[in-house]
Image 1 (cartoon, rainbow, N blue to C red):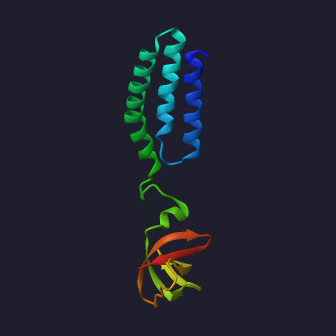
Image 2: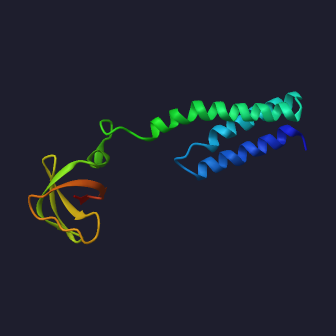
Image 3: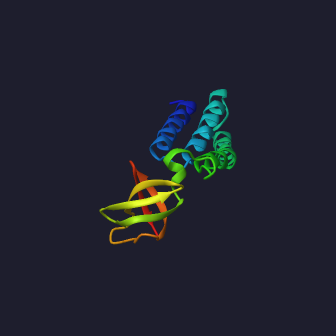
Length: 142
């Protein structure tokens, strides 16, 4: 089997691994390096040069592409919209909040709420923080 075919298979396996492990963004750049090694193999370079191109390409692509991808993965709070913008917001308890329900005021709007952790109970007037929004219900904690 030609070397370029082996490198192409490695690239595909790494790319599939990247798709199956969201958030890491490590295997994708290494797959790019495998493609570079496949090109070098197709040109006719020996195995040692193919491995050197693969290693150098993997280091370079991880060093360049991963920071860019990670910067886009974590959206700053100021850019978030919709219910995602409410996560981390402060809220005031209007009606007692427990695991079964309650009401809070978030930024001037009233929301139904539940405690984020079972067993927590918040009385009216308590300042809480929004941990998550599920449907139209804010999950809060202190």
